Structures are given as structure tokens and as C-alpha cells.
Length: 517
Image (cartoon, rainbow, N blue to C red; front, side, top):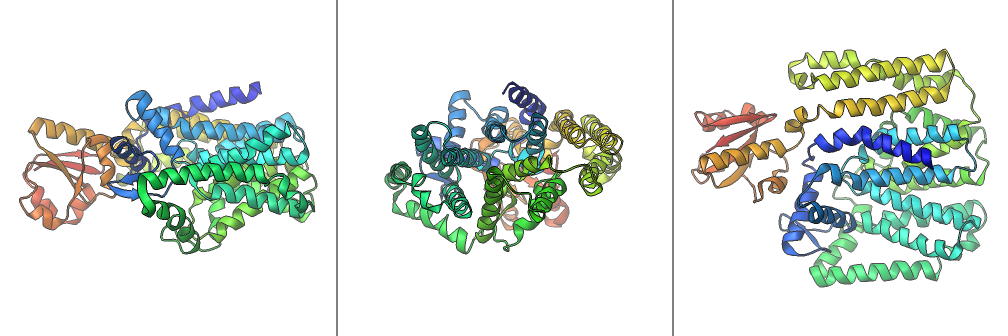
């Protein structure tokens, strides 16, 4: 337990510069903050709007956390908001570690913790403002509680209450996947082990009463606050329509069989290789191994059958990919293919410095030539060389994995200090702060945008609505006295735009421009 706390503290410190210095991404993070600001202005906390339009895409739990943060600190601060993803990720790590404690050595468990927290997409979701990691935490807790119940471990009455509470909170975090995963996994596992007749022990009246009461209170509140149209949108348009014939993120059945390779990087070759070889050799023997494998298969197949697909939806499967491989790792000895699975990411790390030097010398990517990025690349190169040494000279898998993972965290810490130089290209904070400064100095009254994707969420920074306009709108004199925010790409692409801003006071901010009209 003490080692878990120390590792969690190390991970928190490694990610702290990223949490402090990173700007919000316009596509989702800034939109969520804009939705929260609207909710606070309107006094609605169960039914949300985005720029005045109903937003029933997500349940309220994550938004409540963002609202709590705004109330507590008086504003939006990435270093605090990021904890709502990072803390659930660390909880998942701790639960999985406790789950395998009786069957895995301390060294293998440490390896598992490091691999889980450095899986590319899992690590990314631990610092991105999304509700996926929150849902993943509750799904893992529900499955862990189910497994303990069917093994007769712990206080049965307590677990019988915790199980449906975790399931409901998973639904309340992201939606129907929160109940589908625990339900389908438990049914499939009981079928595989010949105990399907015991299903009512876990999905009996206690479970359904907790779930139905929780959902009834939620839906009643939605109906009273948003009316029948919003409730219909929440229950059917955002669930059934997305599952059957998605209006958003529609992908083919095999999508996750491709995305999993980069989602699990740098460990994808190792994890998938160990699992596939173990299945072929009949090494899935213990009940815990069968449960983890069943969970993996059910999650991947279920999500593959749902029309709407993006890589992050597979998040609940990542802990089971890692820890099934960890359970099986002790049965493997050093061999060439297993070494190659680690040598590939180590070689990529070695190439980090020369690749960054080349990118830093190119006009289009010259902004990457930051001292902290060079330090991070140097750390990765040394990490890769050291990992290859442990792998081939010492033939020590664990030391090689530990080196790659710890080196990655050190590199993230070093590179995080250089993020302010990239923020003007990643988000809108620098752009909006400059626009506000120009508006104040020139006594301008409003903000319009051209050629910028999803500009409406700029209201988080500007504290007023932003109006996107067309070229025809710019040709009129309707927007005199406003501040124009536009992308430099739009300026280069259109001679009309260049002519319009010719002679006007303008300022470059990363990939954007601020013009006083």
C-alpha cells in the first residue's frame, strides 16, 4: 500500500507541469467549461445547454465536479480540474493492484502499475478533462466488487449495496455503457464457469432497486427541469440512436481491433503478444485470468457492435489488457519475440532526439525547438538506450519495462515546462487574452471570428458571446468597433480577407491573429 502511495505521488509530480501549464483544448475541454458556465447562469444542474441549445450528450456527474471546482476556486483552473481525471486513474491502478495481489509477485505488480499508467491513451485520459476515466473507475470498482461477491470475500451485505451504487455512478458519469459492461461481463463469466443460475445473487432485487430509484430520481429531475423533449433526447436520441445508427463517430465493426494498437502503446506488442500466445497455449487457467479475459472480450465485442466509436471508449478495457498480461508474464522466459516487443518502443525512444532536432529545424514545426523539449527528448533517448541494455545484455524484462516507464514520466515532467510556448497553437487562452487587451485599449465592444473551428466556447475567457461570421459579413460595415479573431491559415487562403485587414492594427498569436476593426 505504501508503495502505491509513493508511486501515485511520483506520477502526480511528473504530470504537474502539464496540469499547470497546458491550455484547454477547444473541441471538448473548453466546451465543457462553457456548458458549466451556462448552467451556473441559468441555475440548471440536471439539464444542460451549449450556447443556448440543449446538451443531453452526457449525464451530470462530471459537470457537477466542474461546477464544484468553479464554486470552490471562483474560476476554472487546469491544475485542479485535471485531478478529476488523474485521481480516478490512480484509483483504477490501486484497485487492479489489490485485485491481483494474491496471485502476482511484488515485482510483477510494480511492473503492472507502471505499464497501466504509461499506456498512451490511458495516460492521456488521466490528464484530459473528460468523463471517461471517471466512468472507468466506477466500472472497475463494480467488477471488482462482483468478483469478490462471487468468491465470497468481504462483507456480503456491504458489497451487495456497493455493487449497484458503483454501477449507477458509472451510468451517471457517462451513460448506458456504465451498466452494460458490468451486466454483460457478469452474465458472460457466470456462463463460462457454469454458474449462471447464481445470477440473481448479484442482479437481484437489491441491485435493481438501487438502480431504479437512482435513475427514477434523476429522470424525474430532468423532466421537471428540462421537460419531456430533453428527457426523450437523453434516453433515446443519445443512447439508442448512437448505438444503432450513429449520427456521430460512426465507424466499422473492426475499428477497435485497429485502434487498440496505438491506444496501448508503447506496450501494445508486449501485452497483445502475451495474451494471444497464452490463449493459444492454453495458459488461461486460474479463475482470475478467465475473468479478466472474459471482461476484455465482452468489452471489445460490445463496443464493436455499437455504431458510435472513438478510441477513448475502450478505456474500461485497458486495465484488463495490462493486468491479464501481468498475470501471465511469470510463465514467460526471455525470448526473441518478447524482447522485440520491448525493443521496438525502446528504439523509438532512442530516436526521439534526432527526430526533434530535425523537426525543430523545419519552418512548419520550428515552434517545437524549445529547451525543455530537447531535455525531454534527451531523457527519452537515454531511457531507450538503457532499456535496450537491460533487455539484451542483462536479459531483464522487468528492469527494461521499469526504465521505459519511469523515463517516460521524467520526460513528461521536463517537457511540460515548455507547454506555454505551444498553448497559442493548441488552445484559445492566449488568443482571447490578447483580444481582451485590444478591446480594452481600443474601446471595442464585441468579438467576431472567421476561419476558426468551434470558436463559440471562447466565451469562457471573453465572458460574452462570440459571433462567427462569413466573408460576406466581413465585407459589410456591420462589425465596425469589434475585435476580429481569425486563423492565419484563413488569411493566407483568401486574398479578400487579406485586403480587408490591410492597414488595420493586427497582432499574431500563434496560429491566429487579432485585428481591431
